[in-house]
Amino acid sequence: MKHSVSALCLLASGLGLTAMAQTASMPSAPAPAGAPAATAPAGPSKIAIILFEAAVGQTNEGKRDIAQIEQKFQPKQTELKTQSDEIDTLKKKLQAGGTTLSETEKASLTSSIDKKEKALQRDAEAAQQDFQTEMGETLQTLAQKVAVVAQKYAQDNGYSVMLDASSSQQQQSIILWASEQTNITKAVIDAYNTQSGVPAQPATPAPAPRTPSSTRPSGAAKTPPAH
Image (tube, rainbow, N blue to C red; front, side):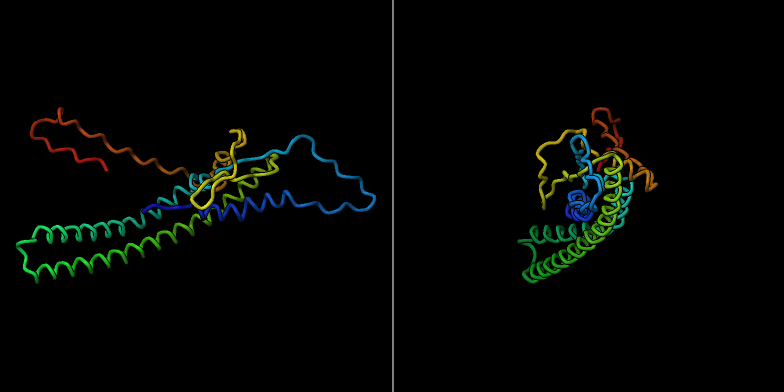
């Protein structure tokens, strides 16, 4: 199963990052009569660019939560794979027995395959819905917290505007080009990791390389392919 965070992170960024941009562009209240005119800040406004979706998913908390949810649904994924393999076995049996199975046996096999395929489709759709719901709720909550940290970082570092450069199937970034110096994605990730206190997740060990057949001792068991 693949997780998709684009729409969720964009929603959270819309709640947080867009609110900041709107606040920055709101007109100031009129000054009291007789008060000295406000002096405009010197120099051009600083603009920050953030890949918000990446920032959410690459925080230590995001990596931890995503891994936990995927691990939670792994048994269900294995169960669905077993159901699929069983259907494939029955189909091969039906195909191989084209001339040896009776019409009654063929009809029974066909009916069994049809029922199992419908059950598999039902189970897969339910599991996918449960997975997406849990992943979505988790990432949406996290995205809102990351947005708060991003706003604070931008304000503390003198940025007037912060733009989300993330692209997704639902929405393409409107930013055509920006200097790398304006990209605060990593800085926000680091700031959030420090605030959350969630440690970095252990690296996934790389699969062991296959043993070349030319160097395998005679009679030795074959090395299974890495998954």
